[in-house]
Length: 217
Image (cartoon, rainbow, N blue to C red; front, side, top):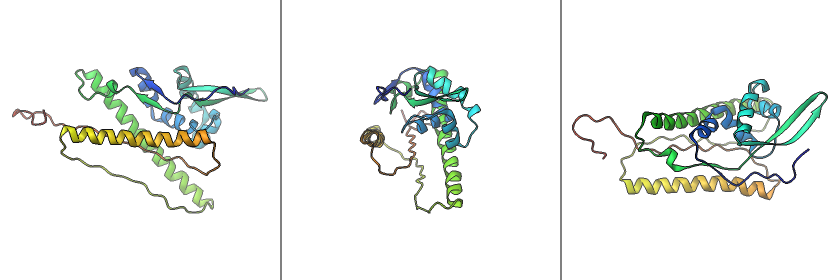
């Protein structure tokens, strides 16, 4: 039975590296994105991903065990019991100390690299699935609706104060992006929406010391 009192929290802060690694997995990342608007079963999520439900149970169990998703309803179909899962929070923010670029251990360095690459991999898989799924929709007769993909990569030389300014502006954009979805969820509007993905990686780029001193220090 649905728990009428349950509502995802506005935000949960991730401060543990192990928890970060769990949520950074590309498949689990996509599962949580799909569960954001409303509760769904494993089978319903599998259909959206174009995957087999049997491949997702491990990921669902891990996300539930670590508090990222919650069972809010159950449906009995014959001898089977289907659980309906919902995200535990609309936003999972990272403790900035976890993403500190001034790491002084190989383990810390690998943690950041693993996180960023997992995010890039999740973006790649989501984009690939989205493009092929949209192709199938159009082949099935869905009307074409022109939407653009923005793809951009730059390397710029910036002073620290200007880089910090860009960092804050990008963070504000991310906050605005997340708040818009939260507002729509709370309004329970009938306005038609589709998911949009936003991935940002902003980092200082260093080269190995050539022996002549590091001009970036």
